[in-house]
Image (cartoon, rainbow, N blue to C red; front, side):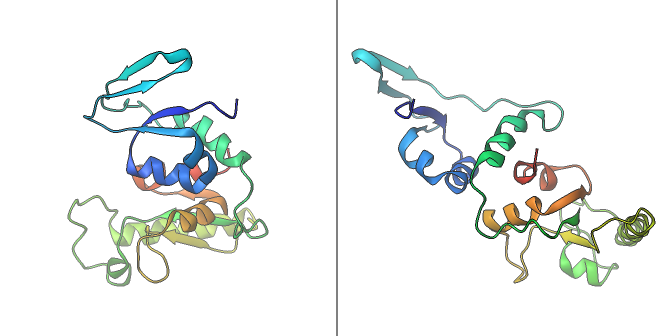
Length: 185
C-alpha cells in the first residue's frame, strides 16, 4: 500500500541513491534508523517496535544481491539525460589521469592498479576485438570515477555513463561493483 513505511538502516550512500532514484519514495515512505541510536516506533493499532541496529550483512560473491535493486532502477521513469542511441564499451581504470599520461609515475597509495603499460596493451586488445567482431561501439571510454572537470562523478553522471554501456570491463572491485546498480538487468 502507498501508506506502508519502510524502516531502513541509514547509510549516506544508500540514502543518496534512493533519493536519486525516487525522491518521493525517499521523502514519504522511509523512516531512517541510525546506528547506535536505539529507537522506538509506533506501529499499527498502538503497538510499539523497538529497533536495535547492527552492521549490514556481508554478501559473498558478486552482485546477485543487487538484482532486485537493479530491476527497481530499471522500472523507474528514465532520467532526462539518458541516451539510448549511442552505446559504449566502458573500461574501469584504477590509474589516475596523471598516470595515464605518464606510466612511470608511482601507483596510487593503495597500490591497487594495473601496470600502466599492461593496461594499455589490454585496451589495444579490446579495440582490436571490437573491430574484429564489428561491434557498433566506436571506442572504449575510460572510467576513473572523475568527470570531465576532474571532479568525483555525481550519481547522475554515473547513472548516465553506466546506463550507456553495453560492455563493462576492468579489474574486479568496488569501482565496478558499486556502479552495477546503474546497469540494465
